[in-house]
Image (cartoon, rainbow, N blue to C red; front, side, top):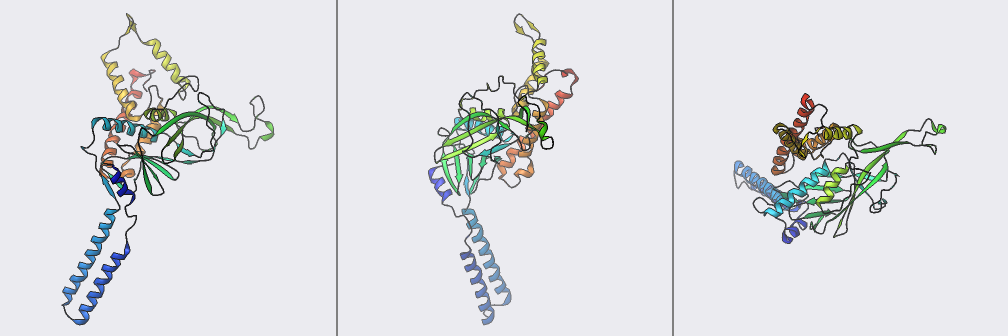
Length: 385
């Protein structure tokens, strides 16, 4: 487990294999073998044995140094229920964030909307792709999956005890209590590739007249630009942590922010059905009207209750909200399947591979359940997300 002493060992670990002892042993063995051959002290097979012994010693020295470059952390059987439950919640939040179509990192120059306000559409600022998922932890080997966020020159890794900020080949500990996460919404004129889960509010002409129609003077280069509704996540804390992320999937960003105690209002835009098509909202409304009620209580069959329970389990496995459409569910499945694909975790620890194998089973089962509901004639016209 992570302690101050263990963290000091991690930060003071050797970064590379020293060649000097390897050259000394290898060179000394060769010189000794040559002398023994010239002086004819030993027979040829004995000299070969000396060379073999020297090569083995070089191999042992090399892997001894390599082992000192990696510090192992063991958690199995060492976590109390409260810590384990908290870490499970954090892990699910980061996994939700990883399922977003795009996550970017912004500089400090991005203008944030005031609390409770929605900024008008702004041009897409300078940004870089961020990585969220099961990331390699330099110098650390843990017996559980470690999720992280890599944003520019800094990375944040999530462990049961808290987070580790990695920057300039050095780790700094940040407790979950001191990690501050804030959430905001922003509207961009998206001029780059549009993420699959982006919430497009409208499309505007690059060159337009006051009434919103295209300006006829710019026929050749005039195209429609989508106005999208993204989420902003700002993470701050000790050691000058400043991580500013843009997230295409607002629901995933909301779940992440709330896990770390952020106050999130979903009033932007006017209702929480942002990102759902008019067809989904109509189906929700029709579904509500069609529910039969008797004596003020809705009466549903056992089959309906069982179906809803299976769908709830499937939604949790894919990290989608109730009422999600086919496109959103399919995008979430593809993203998670890519994260946990065996090829993606082949070089990680056995515990990570085991975890991803289990998650792939859950993800495939959840998607199969959704497809079964979509193809079931009995559920035609009903909301199955």
